[in-house]
Image (cartoon, rainbow, N blue to C red; front, top):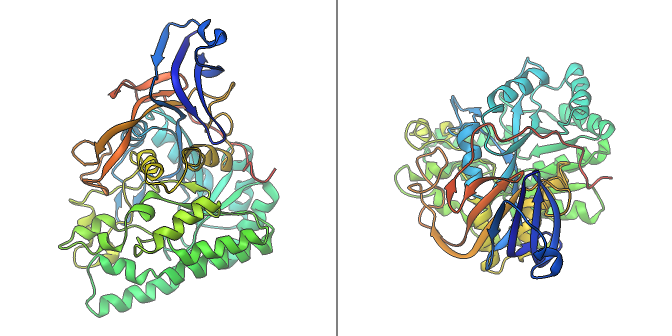
Length: 466
């Protein structure tokens, strides 16, 4: 039996803050005891970690990543190996990535392909959602089988006609199926048909710069699609999780639905909380670095997103990590913003940025852990194995120094991408040590993990619907 004791830290979960020692046995949390008490002092272990003056928090759960995603004629630049290593550096110990069904292929083919990419390559634990691009009778039957084996969430797109797009009828059928099998539909809510018209018109006017990406993907078209998704889910009697909410008008749609008692949930991402259309408008072709969908919004939307996180109309902050290098990838869209690969790097920055939000007074420490660890674990059927520090949970634990100062930079990050979306941003707080199932993957700012340590994690259904 291997034993580790973490002594003297402030243990923070979504529900509690307590000065406690943590006993880890064979990769799991065995016990907590108030620091300095006879119970805690009696523990012996081969390894003792001194967390005095530090936070002891659950490893982050990033429920929205895209490693090695094929998109826009290229691939996301982080592999499962580089991406999960970067996640660990940022205090995230579980990712849920998206396996992709291609049109004309089965869900099983897509899932098998993603298992092949990830297996033996991950530094931290991982699970999968399933992107459903081709709704038909066989796909619907497969959804039942996937739920049974622990892939319990399915993403559909109201955007990207000709690629991932599903029409309202396909969406309704998938929602009806999920209402029966316990799955959760995740929705990219933007009116892609209307957006394509606006893209065509903008390019015809010679509006080709990156900033026009944000102007054609209008907030009203995010709100309209969010409203429509909610109503379709209501018709189907199904729960709904709207991904990467960026616009105040979309938040209002979610809040209204939740006020009506509907099982509707919303996720936002750090880029919408900290970046804006000012970045898309950076001179030269620099704005291309910030092209993602849903797009960055004018700065006034940020206050409404923070408010939504405080009122629980938004429950989760994930990254939508989908990095493309500026050189050779983002540059594919020079002269035509519609050809810029959509996606930002961020899996390494999320926990730190949200701690900065605590420092800045946007959220409390416990809410930080709730939106970054506990709620994503509950939302996607992994709690309390993941997302908390309690006896029986996996020993996914981060020793976090709340006083350390850092400057975010591509020069020092570990993501496989040639720029940082937060270049030069000063942050208070930094990950010091990370345990994944009790194994140190970051040890006092040194990488001590390995590809292949990370294990595939089957999931139960959404724990907000029980």
